[in-house]
Length: 467
Image (cartoon, rainbow, N blue to C red; front, side):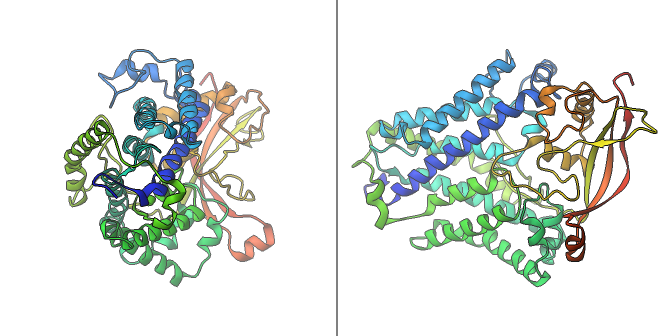
């Protein structure tokens, strides 16, 4: 080990660079496939209209002066290709400025998308990916040892991510304080996966132990990320195990996957260092650049640090336009009952015709359909449908969505799993609110249904294109 880098962290660098790059591939592909229909020139919340009505975007973006769907696709696919090269380890073979340039490009390209993404890109893991991409740019290459200061900044990010989530829970819903949160969470979480029904059916004492384990993992263990080895590696292992548990029990886009990758910043593997040994040192210019970056991040850390200990702690927010030094957190409140918006259409009279249900890819719909696994891929429309059912504002995009269904817009229909009209236009559409709950063991054995639902009323009454 020299004063700037350590050979036993080379495996951590390999996991971090390739793992973060893999998540960037998913993020860019997701944008290429979903962004035009959601936010494109003819989307639900068109970017050109958004840019025309605001003074300036919330941060830097290539689309500030001109947006087209073609340009968006170029940005997304170029980003996916560059990230794919990092997954294969190609830029890492060169001098340290090569992977640095690639990751900074990924950061700027994806920031361009996020900063015009409006509510469809308003998730904590979007700004998390941006901050991670920036920091990962300063991990060096196969020709250098791994900068310890960059690894410590990544550990500081993991600390904020985990400790912030733990504090927001304690300050928020009393269900986290009386250890009953998981009586409800697996059933009411935004997008259950194939195992969520089974997790919900675990004994309640085990659910209480899960909450205790969560508090330990998020409020105690993160401090040990800065402890001497092997304690830091053990702390990283605990975080990885708890994130794997979350990965098994629900769909949270790439939040769990990126946290698992980030935890490797605290992993020290001297016995495996030879498998990914870096160069003997680092060039002077690279040392200067890394320390300059670290000084910047030290200054920017004041705002998220102050937020952690604020009574009015914010969850998932940026304090600057460059999306660095952010605040993170999740599930400060737990929903006790599940509501779903069910969208239907009919080709006949709205009062006597037969209504047919549109099928979404990830959110619960037909009671007999088993929830699917999509994470780390992010289904943005399905997530916002969950917030809409909870009463969050959303008619500015949801009514345009219903109009797109009335027009049988191909781009919009591709976001769905099933179009009951096979590409033809319905005459009328409507949106109804249903109460959902998991079926009991007896109901599941008798009917094969994973859900039991009952109609509660209309969210949007029958509407047609002429209405």
